[in-house]
Image 1 (tube, rainbow, N blue to C red):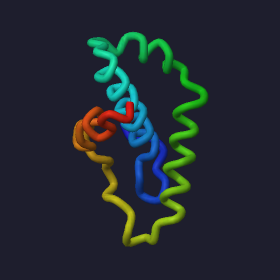
Image 2 (cartoon, helix red, strand yellow):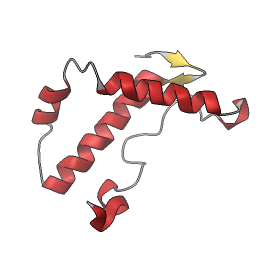
Image 3 (spheres, helix red, strand yellow):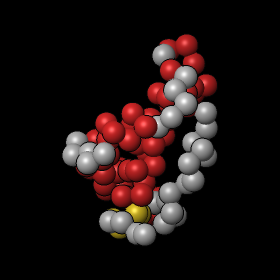
Length: 90
């Protein structure tokens, strides 16, 4: 299902993937095996997802047309290991 398309990017899908990646980073660091708590906390989300979508729109507004990414955001897991990216700073 396609969400809101802004300048050729499905920002609903990208925002959801960003939220999923953030939750995964926290879950992996804390050793949480289930996304049940995250699902409860973010169900009916009225703050985080709109903020992510606003950020995505702003980034797109600062890009030239030829700098924009392909239509589909990358698949989850292609962002690298969130834990190793942050290392000891967590």
